[in-house]
Image (cartoon, rainbow, N blue to C red; front, side, top):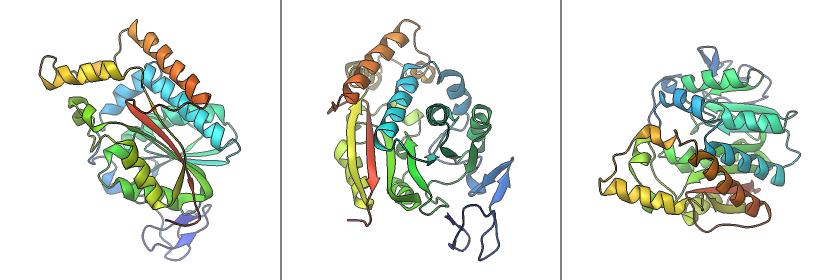
Length: 293
C-alpha cells in the first residue's frame, strides 16, 4: 500500500494518485518526488559527492566487499523475498548488486537528492527510482526487505527513519542496515561526510528494537583494518596529517586489493557464523515483529 503524504490515507500501490484526496506526488526532473523541497538541497550529505562516488565505487575495496556482505545477508535471511526498497540509494551501486543477484525481485530505490537518482538511473534503467525524505516514507506494509546502507548516520532523526522503515515493511519483513561504528573513531572524515554520529552496537541495536524489530544478526566488519583506522584518526587529531577527502576513496593500487582480500576473509568468517565485536562498520539484520515492545 501507498500512504498519501497529503492526507495520510492508504491506497493501492498501483494507483498513481490518492484514492481519497485525489492528489499525486510531484515530478522533479522526471522522477516521482515526494519531498521536492529537499530534492536539490538538504542537510546530511553533499550532493556534489555523487560524481566522485560513481567513479570509484565499483573498484574501491570497501564498497565492493560491503555490497557482497549485504547481498549475502539478504540471501541468508530472506532468500525468497519479492520486493525491496533501498533508503538512500545514492548512485545505485548497492542496488545494482542486489538486482544482479535477485533479478526477479521488484526493486525500488529512493534518494532525497535528485542528482543521486540521475546516476542511479544510468545503472538501473529498469528499476523504479523515487525522490523522498526517509523520515516520511510513502508506503505501508509494501516491502519484504528494506535496506539503509550507511544512511542513518547522516540523519539527525534516525529513529524516525527506523520507524518509517518498520511501517513500510510487510509483517515479518527484514530491515538490513549498515552504519559506521565507534564514537572514538570520529574524525574529520566524518565531518566531511556530514555524519551526525558514529554508532555503538548497543545504541543502534537498542533504537532498532525499540521500534518493534527483532535483531536476527549483528556483527562488526572492517575489523582487520581497525588498527589502520585508529592510527589514521590519531594523526588527524593531532594535526600531523592533513585530512584529504579524496584519499578516503582513491586508494593506492597496491593497498586496495590487499584490503579487499582482508575484508573478504572477514566476510568468509561471518558466513560461517562468526561475529566481530569491534570494527569500523556494523551490519544489523532485523525482522519486523507484530507489535512494538
